[in-house]
Image (cartoon, rainbow, N blue to C red; front, side):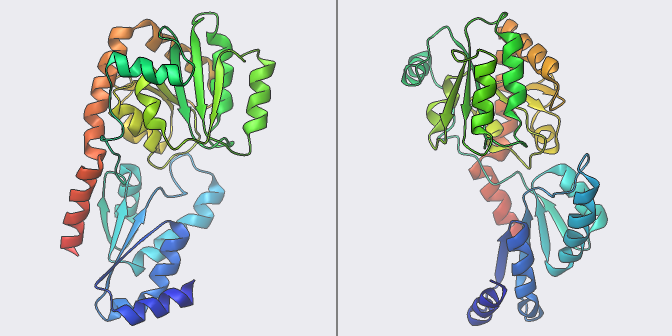
Length: 304
């Protein structure tokens, strides 16, 4: 890939090269060393450093030195979380700019009226009076859906009409389904599998939940906020970027099952507060729309 990119870059004399992702970013920046000497500007977007507050020592030892050294091989480093921006701006020798993610689409994700909400619920086999929670993400250990399933076991007696939709597939699928079966939650938890049409589901739910241990900038939470849904999320860098505790949702420790149950119960019991949370989250999400991010990117390109 390195030699192919080097050949492509040399043949086309680009004015600007914009690379993304850790591996793509490293290889492209190395391949563009000579091009930079000839005036090409290189931009790298970090979608979430592997080292962050709370990350393992191993991640800091391996990934921090690589990103610090590679920062010298680009003209502008874009971060999509403020935590990453503060660290890079303080420690890396390059121009660092913060941008509000990669863009979410309010044309796809938005609140709907009761009629459309009921139609969406019917399509998923849900009833009007069900209390519906959506949890989206690959079924793996990091996304930690098992915490939500454990919380559901506690909540079932308090919220008899509880329905939890788990969207995604992955290596933990059978483990999670077995957990659900063991907890006798067959009528409560619905596994949706891999879906590319969650804009037909998210507007009809009551609450979005994420229990992941780490996140960059989670699109599923932003999409729920665009639909004016309150959220209950784990305490990690990506969630802290989007969620103001007690304002547009609640932040709890990733594996704190009882805390998840408590906050979900709180949202369920305080419908007026939940509505205000949804409105506040929608206002936060406006800075992250595709149109807003496009304008930010245009300004960055003009600066280089």
